[in-house]
Amino acid sequence: MLSAVEDGLDTRQSDVNTEGPAGRSYEKLLRPSLDYTPEVAEATAHIFERVKHHIPAIEWPVHAPYIHAINTLKKERDAVILAHNYQTPEIFHGVADIAGDSLQLAMEATRVKAHVIVQCGVHFMAETSKLLNPSKTVLIPDMKAGCSLAESITGEDVRLLREANPGVPIVTYVNTSADVKAESDICCTSSNAVQVVESFGVDTVLLIPDEYLAQNVAKQTDVKILTWKGHCEVHERFTADELLAYKEADPAIQIVAHPECPTEVTAVADYTGSTSGMIDFATGQKAGAKVLLVTECSMASNIQDQAPGVEFIKPCNLCPHMKRITLPKILDSLLEMKEEVTVDPMVAQKARQAVERMVNLKH
Ligand code: 13P
Ligand code: SF4
Image (tube, rainbow, N blue to C red; front, side, top):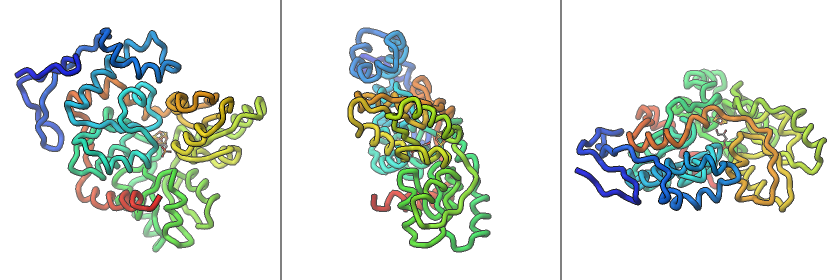
């Protein structure tokens, strides 16, 4: 059986159905042509307009066929792509249906209508989407896309912390495994951590596993914060000296930092907030403003078109985990319906409660 050739892209089905994730049967699709044809150039021209300052014209013929193929396959698979702000510009602008920070992606995951979610981000984000959508198929293009924070703590560690601190609520950053979430009372992200900590109305809270996020939150609340020694390998590398050197060279520069940075860094920042908070700050500046983004490298490129008059200074660090996600892997993910993210149902039930408590807090 051969299916229609949609949008000029040949993704003809073979006559074999493939046993896909979640026990569902998915039609096996043939690998589409990845030639840069005039038709592909025309279909992707509006996307190139948005990324042309970050992707040289000579590279576009490499990306465009993948973007065209992925956007066609999404319809055939009834799939939606959720992408974090740290994804590369060709993913962020080219194929993402929804892009945002960790909280926005978790909230959007609760509203997804499509049967398949392809998570362009790291594993804990895909797990969160699965927790919120147990009946949907959640795919991640590279199962090895991890996170140094998620790897810093286990469910057993949290059980021991609870024993050692009886009665103290445990707030877990979303950058953790489902096992860890299942052992905690509620989750938080960098954009709602203060609100979540204060929601208990008690004087002491455990906020784990990011030590620096906890210290930055402690500066904004009277609640005593106990924490853990986990760090983000991207944000822990920034230093106050490095940033002040920029400011000495040009005092007009505004420093915008993520709360996963050490407190010596956030102490010299003009603004500290989640990736979406940083975007709001930067896009709210007048033309001619100079903003130094203290975070992962892709973010400035992704938001430049929303803040055309702002000059971004980028002392950035790459997240090697986020960068595992590429267009060829997203295409394979949709073609072969892989890699499926699953969570043990017993763990999922408890972890879901912790995420849902966060999502249901009034924002
Ligand atoms: P937010 O997008 O929630 O600010 O998180 C940043 C991050 O490091 C995600 O991995
Ligand atoms: Fe984890 Fe840091 Fe990478 Fe985010 S940027 S995924 S916190 S290592």
